[in-house]
Image (cartoon, rainbow, N blue to C red; front, side, top):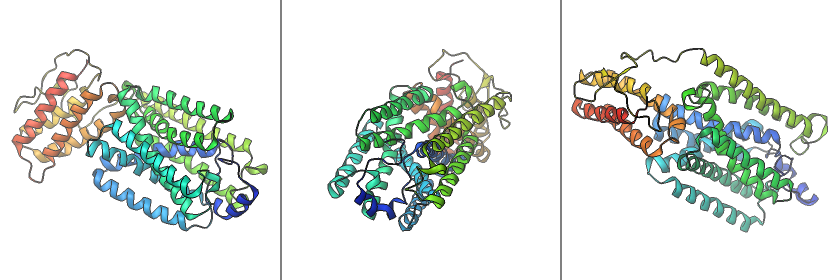
Length: 429
């Protein structure tokens, strides 16, 4: 069952033989699914923070997360009992690395989301096929050997990569946006639960739900983090991550206390770990995240968003001509991307610094463009993926020119001018 203490039923002999190992695996309860969704968002926002905000870049971030994941899995495999903080740390790190794996294929290698979705689907099928051929079962409750645990984590990693690719494909190709995405993926999970209750295969419904929680978590995270003009609640990535992390910590601490008192096999029963208390804790965590999120969003909405570093007026943009700084803003036809003026303000500032050959200041200022563009990706990209990619490539060209070991002023000026002209063309006022 999706929300019961077992993924499948097992015989008494199987239960007895696996009692020692099963203490390493959490019961599949409502709390399990809430933590899973929240950890998905934490994984994505933290990876983005290290890559863009902290300036580590994708290569360094990938290396760090891979090393941390390997270390966490080593600890997980060597533990003799289920330790919630270790298990869920592994899940968060798998979430980060699975997301980075898909982003590497898409952004670095230029692999189509259609291709990456198909590749990860086939990979997951292969993992399941080998797992079943070796063990004759895919049941979560039957993972009672190190080899089965290895198959388990391989499947989880692949589900995160597949969920990322499939979610991005649905959002980008179908222009769903994060609001519709949250409703659709949430609805699919509900349909999976109903199918399970009507007698559908328990193993199948578990893994389908596990894949779907990845895009659902990402959509919910985007709903909270994106600016209000993009349809979000403007909570920001940092506040959202802290809010979700706090909820995860509370639930994991409770898990730790239950395991310490009763053991993982018994935590679904008894006065402390029954199904009703589990639903109550899971529901309370979800409600708390929603209420606090909306409250912080309302508080944020009362404060005007400003860019304290901007030294050009919001109603002016650069002309794109060499040596130009700003010119009167001209109205353009509304495009699907909407109002891009906040990016144009930063680019105009960068262009002015480049025109003065102050490349060091321009390189510092362009960081604001990188962060702002990355923060708005989930809201802008579904509106017009082709134009978003064009602008994204041109922003990358500007970053590359300014961050070269020996940046050349003509190259920087040309890249910034090209970006400015495209922004002027696509901006909707």
